[in-house]
Amino acid sequence: RMASTVAARVVVAPRGARRRRRARASSSADEYATACGYDPRDKAKEMISRLHTLVGVRIVMAQLDGQGNECSEDVNQSSVTAAMLKQMETTPLVGTGSEFIESLMRSEDADVRLAATRVIEVRREFGDEFDWDEMKKSLLVDLSQHRLEMLRTHAAKSFDGGA
Image (cartoon, rainbow, N blue to C red):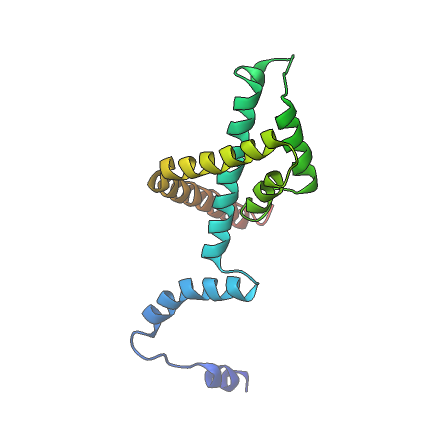
């Protein structure tokens, strides 16, 4: 009785169906992510834009505070850097980071508004100079190494009886 139930559920796939399933596997990840409320490419674009904004903010603050502040115990913080950090508390650097820059542009302090325009220019320059191909290569190497480590760990635990 059980064998007939199992046999009834077996479906013979047409020739080439396995290849088509593999081809669909990548799109199913996109469909899953989209069903969760975001498109993976849009999310990556947003995160990279936020990274560029953060780099721009960091570079401008370092320029404002002067060279050598990172290693010094006697840190000199400019009033504009202090204002930017205070603004970051009220308008966190989320999304693409543009909302944060817009909040700086609404500041009453002309120096803060000028710093915001510098952030805009620095993030554009950083984007122009960013080595996308190197990032992709590095990412794929990291993912591959992580995958192998995880599979080795899983195999070792499986062979050791789950210990």
